[in-house]
Length: 110
Image (tube, rainbow, N blue to C red; front, side, top):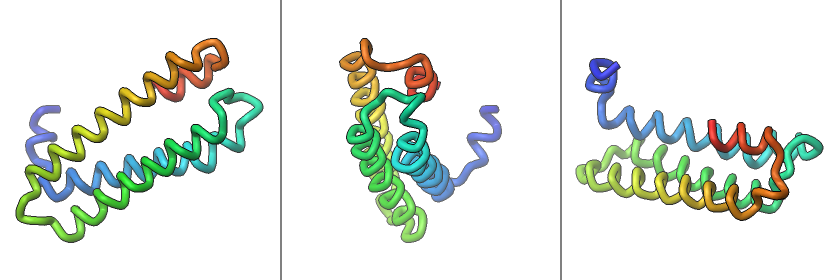
């Protein structure tokens, strides 16, 4: 596993991050709202999280295509923002705990 990670170029890390963020944006903004009879996370919050994920994807795609000279600092910023996004999502799960279903937790935790 470690060997595989070492073989991924820094440029491709931006692409992997962009694809993951885009997948999150699609799930949160399109698919989960369609499943609102199973998912109790409010659609307004899902769309807000989707919008954030979309901008993360856009930023990572731009970094992939342009591959700036200062890629290391940009990668650190993206990693920090991803961590903040995860903590924000976790705080929403805690705040809305009483309202959410098992499927909500399974989606957001896994």
